[in-house]
Image (cartoon, rainbow, N blue to C red; front, side, top):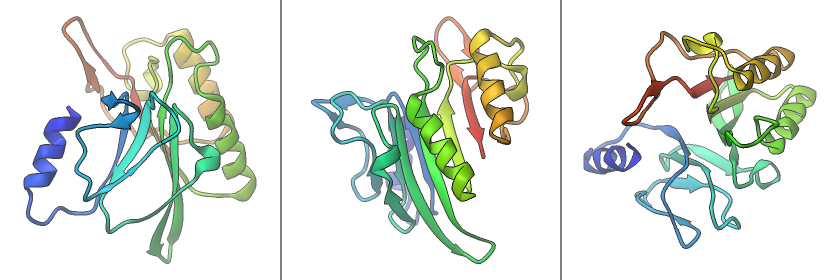
Amino acid sequence: GASSLMRYLGSVQHTPSFILAVQEPYVWKGKLTGFDRTHQLLYDHLSLTPRAAIYASRDLHLWPMPEFTSRDISTCLWLTHQPHLPKVIVASVYMDYTNPLVWPDMLGKLLRYCRHGRHKLLIMSDTNAHSSLWGSSDTNNRGKALEDLIFLNNLAVHNTGAHPTFHNRRSSTIIDVTLS
């Protein structure tokens, strides 16, 4: 998982630039653990149990967006310095399977902000939902609700194939979804 990736990144002499979305990280006394502090770690530092974070190489120009950050969503502005795409809003989102609204309210606010300001947006999420739209063999009610959110906000799904993104002893599913 995340800790083995962190060990790998730490062992590489010259690590290329990266942005990772982390959901349900290990938390000890309100702090995320297992991350190399030589890189950027963005999350809601006021939450005792944050469930979403962004971990990125230090060379990337990321600016936290606290107005769109909470326990279940971590958002930042990425200044890419590329003429064709100078800035992108990046969000790591955890969608609690017990939430009847499916996605956190803060994600709805972020989508409205990006739509009205015509901002580019990259969402990396643990949806806890199934939909054939992102390669699941079935579609559940959570997946149908997310499909509506995707279509209403003109989002693109970047998952390809039907490779499971989550594994445990009982099952393998596709619940991690990347959108823009």
